[in-house]
Image (cartoon, rainbow, N blue to C red):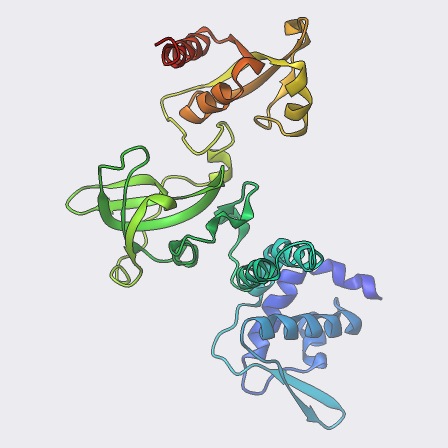
Length: 338
């Protein structure tokens, strides 16, 4: 009989639970059995009750149980309840919980104060996590530790505007300030970037990428009365699909970039690809080098990756990127010709 519950997904079951739990009279298992028209067995209802009690506790609420004869009535002292969101957030929190578990096994290997600070941070993130389509991690999880603004923007995602002052990327002598409507956070090479609409004083609202390291001032109270402005980006995962890094030039098309990589770097790129589209290109193989290709837009982060590989990479095509690499390498060489 336990398999009957498969007919009704957990999210749908929780919707019924939350409607009945906020009623003054509460709900019994028999009420739920009738509500689900017998399609959810008593075992599943009891398992639901245990999980719901956990979710409520995590979110500062309590599942109250009162005995009425041989049965029990359950209710929650609140006007509204969103068990579905609690459930989704708890699922997204699992990676953070796994990190905490991993860190706890490092006792004796790393300084105790350092371990404790990390565990505290991930515990807080797991308890206050948002849906994962709003945030993307790179590899260095600890780089937000010194950013006081990180939790402010994180908690404002897709809900509230914040007043912010910052230096645009590569323009440290310029300062912008205004209302920012954060929608997405992305980590790239140990730096965090926030994306959303930005309304500079006296100017029109524009889509903006803000490096959090460049934020000079912020206030999460001055913009509480502003209605949240949605950006034209519907899916940020798709927005980053065709690029390396965080810069997505609208005017650039996706190109197939063919290159040769040295044998000593080949395995490293196989283990950690430059981009998900990376594949081998055997017709480019020569002595000491393997052929590869990726399909991306040209941007500044792509150039940085290429130049960082130095003599271990040769761009074969397209010609305009090959010429740009040659030009930049020649400029660098002149610094040593003095």
